[in-house]
Image (cartoon, rainbow, N blue to C red):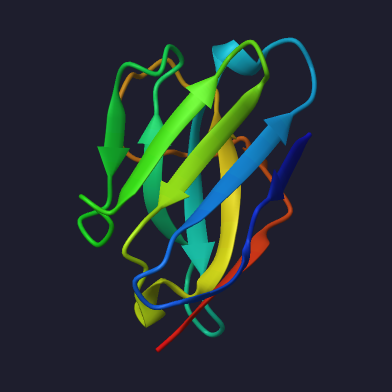
Length: 121
């Protein structure tokens, strides 16, 4: 089970940090990542991180502004979002991918419940 938190309302240029806590003892067996979705649009891949945390993969739209990290002792993945833009407004979902690959977009096996991020101009 994945529990996302940390969303909220922020002005353009501001920062937010999302967290996603996983239950169970197999967290380090999964690549983790984040997607986002706005009304009427498909869910969009944002970023992934490998099991060890050593490899990350970002969508071009967030590269240089967002940073993903994970703490396998705490079963938690984080998304630090800086220089937020109104276009980043969305519901953000954490996800877990059990495939034996290191990088690239996720194909999730599990989803978190989503947390709303709203960036005002």
